[in-house]
Amino acid sequence: MIKIEVNNRTVEARKGETILSALNNCGIHVPTLCSMAELSPTGACRMCVVEVEGHEKLVPACSFPVSEWMKIKTHSPRVLRARKTNVELLLSNHPDDCLYCERNGNCELQSLAEDLNVRKRHMRGVRKELKTDYSGFSIVRDPEKCILCSRCVRVCEEIIGVSTLDFVNRGNRLAIDTAMANPIGFSNCIDCGQCVLNCPTGALTEKTEFHHLDEVLYDAEMISVTIYTGSFCIPG
Image (cartoon, rainbow, N blue to C red):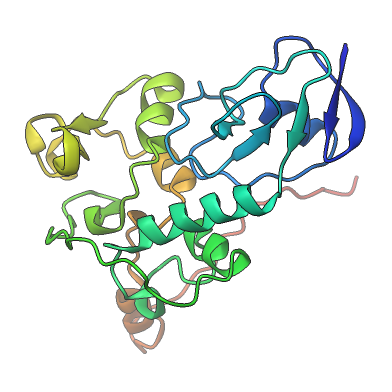
């Protein structure tokens, strides 16, 4: 164990771990959109940047290792300005349909914008005009809402071992797509749902059939059956 200084407070950290891991272990929250504990760090979203004494630039906490007596500021004015700017850049070409989005109220990008008091669009990026992909058996892809955090790419490759999604193109045309840009229903996707579970926005959501369910529930000629799949005990 080594000692580091965080916001003028001395804490212990494991030698070789990242700043983000050390901060989480001592109960200090730093926001991130791309980092996941079980996946390799990428530093893609730059939301977890912190100020480290001796470094001219802000460093990504998710991929920067700790060192003995490192002095870190997690919520300095400079850090908060950088995080707010990052959120504003992500929102600059994001669709304005939060009210109708499946993730409304459960969106990590929306929560960050609220936490950082982003209330006005200061930047306007070029909107992506991409079609929503409904071809999947249980997954809906809306590439316009993708923020390129790569969580879906990494969980599909590193945990599931399928590699359905990956980065394509370069520069401002960079995107996440399937092989040969096939619809997800015609790709090698196995519908495990892990990409949906880990997507921080509404770019990947579950396909629902609630409208068909309502019709069946109110059909007098149909018999409704409820199946309980939880655990239960049989007295004996």
